[in-house]
Every structure is written in C-alpha cells, then in structure tokens.
Length: 300
Ligand SMILES: C[S@@+](CC[C@H](N)C(=O)[O-])C[C@H]1O[C@@H](n2cnc3c(N)ncnc32)[C@H](O)[C@@H]1O
Image 1 (tube, rainbow, N blue to C red):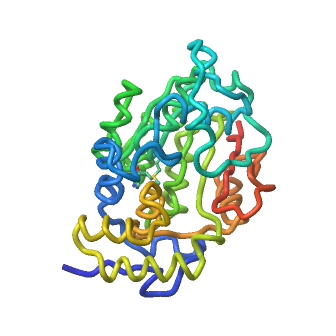
Image 2 (cartoon, rainbow, N blue to C red):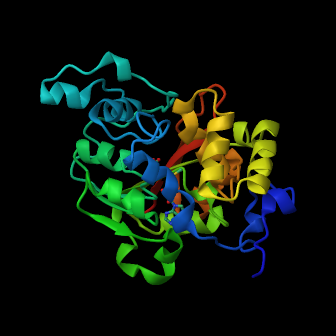
Image 3 (cartoon, helix red, strand yellow):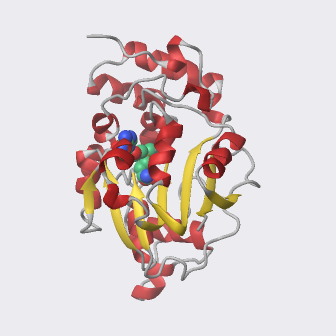
C-alpha cells in the first residue's frame, strides 16, 4: 500500500496556499470523525455537554445567541427557564454583524459536514428548511434525530456527481470542515457550487494562530507517530486534556490527517474567485481567534 504523503509531517507545510491544490490525496473521510460522534451518542466523558457537539436546547440557545444576538430563544418559545449551569459553555463566537433572527425563516439551507447536527438544529430552530450532509455514519445518525433530510455525501462529489445540488441553497453552511481535507480550495469550490445566485455561504476554517502553534504541531506529530488503535487515540486525548470534559476538543485537533491553517486573504480570495461579493470576515474583531468566520453572497 502506498503511504499517503502528509503535508504537515512530510513537507513542513501547515499554512495552506492555493498552489498546493491538487497535490495531496484524499483519505477515508468517513472514518476520521466517526468515533467522536459515536462517543457523543454513547455520552462518553468529554464527548457530550460540550459546545462543539451538543444539540440539547440549552446549547442550541447559545448557538442561536452567537448567530443572532438573541438570548434564550428556544427556552422562551417553549415557556421554560433554561438551566444556568449550561449557559455559555465553551468559547464565544464574535460575529459581527449578527444574522437577523428572521434571516433563516423559510430559507433552503444546506449544512455540509453537519457532524452531530448542532448547526442543523440551530438553523431549523430558526425556521430554515435544512438538508444535512456528512460522510460519518454516526454523525448522520445523530443528525437524523433532529432532521429528516439527512444524506451521506462526500463534499468532493458535489461538482462532478451532484448537479441536483448546484445552485440548490439560499444559505450553505460549512463549519470546520474544509481545512481538514486534502484540498481546502477544491473543497470550497464544491461547497460554493451549492449556493444559488443571491444566496449566501458561511464557512469556518482555522486561522494561522493556535492551530499553527508549536504545541499543536508537536502534539499532532506525536499523536500520529504513537497512537494507532482507537483506544490509544482516545487515551492520548484524555492524557493531554486539561480536564476529561474537554477531550472532544483535543481529539478534534489531533485526529485529522490534514489540519491546514488558512490565511485570511486566502479564504476571502476563495469567495472572490468563485463569484461571491459582499464578503465579510464576521469575527474580524475577535481577540486570539482560532478560526475565520467568513460569509459572502453569490452574484446574480
Ligand atoms: C469538525 S467536524 C464539524 C461538524 C459540524 N460542522 C459542526 O460544526 O459541529 C467536521 C465534519 O466534516 C465531516 N467531513 C469531513 N470530510 C468530509 C467530506 N469530504 N465530505 C463530507 N463531510 C466531511 C466530518 O465527518 C465531520 O463530521
């Protein structure tokens, strides 16, 4: 079996440049996040009640707050008081401008790389008609609990094999997916193809900050050299986690074969080169940002 070349460990390339497009190989994307979502479904320590995954109402109310600035939306509508214990767990997103609370109402939304379904539930709660896609069996199983329209789809197949999805969405969201692939630019082009003229696309990708740090790079190198079985990988994540409850964050950062960081101008350039305007870096004022939150509108 030929060894797949890893840009970070074999070529010392961590910061993505579009010149690298086409140089690296796809991997088994259906496997790489699947364990995280399985552990979430099993409610393993460190894999639930976490901002990065949880889909219970309290957590979704925080996601809604981050997108729209409106507090306790679901709790208020359901006439329940939300648990303060779960309020604002994890990092805050600094998104500016916020989406109006009615923005998603009746919009056809596509959640590409939906994971366990937290953004799908958020968009649905705000009135969006959401189609959710991913390649992870357990991610899809989790998302099916909150959405009927869930489909296994490798995002790299959209341009060549899924004409039905071209221009499909009023709003496409792809949160934390592109930079974990062999070709983030090609991945973006596939995602961008789903947006109808006048529709919007929102991506989150890692910035050249924390994920380009010596800590992340050296820990990832050790992880990929040492941890082979799923048990070893999990043990490694728990070992370096400050508290076991944070294990999902660590596994997320360690487990991916590709973990590119994307310069802001490169990610903004993706939108511009692919027919988008009004491109906004929503978290441009965030101190110590880990990623870029960028949205743009497809030109008519
Ligand atoms: C970091 S997780 C983010 C999940 C979700 N967007 C969220 O924010 O909670 C990345 C997700 O992208 C999915 N993914 C990775 N490569 C993919 C591909 N080529 N096609 C479709 N989904 C992919 C993974 O299975 C995983 O569920």
